[in-house]
Length: 209
Image (cartoon, rainbow, N blue to C red; front, side):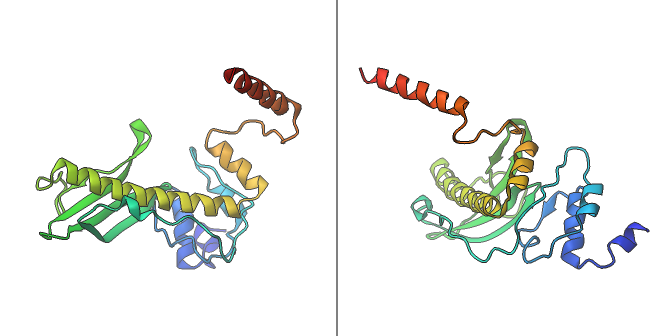
């Protein structure tokens, strides 16, 4: 059977999911919403080097309480009025647009993953050109970058919380393995863990003397 025939019964979003697994870098934040379970045989066959399939997810959860963004990190005198964000291999990627409340200046904060240092970066950019901003002070840039960073960190945390909520033990193990954390998992009553906790308690008690 041809590849096209295998995918003929999939809708547009499901086709995009398969394309993403085959190597597409960006996935819209809404693309994985309200979809039926894909054909696992097809997904396993399409896993490429450097990729991992996470099976056993419990989809269709109706609601979950999450922590909202903390507005105390908002940049005073600046308003977030737009954002163009996608997921680039699971990392937020795109731009966030802020307008100064007093003089209407616009500051674009880029959001990108920088592999060499394994961290998200938030460059302060010209609103329409691929260059750093030149009309904002260092203090203004620092305040707006903190605002943007706090919102993106909340976005990542909420997505991670949802992912943990829908994960089964099978998918949790696959997630840990894909993250390079595929270590032996110990139960709470494992004697090795109990011994370690006892040593820590003893060391803490000695520290108080």
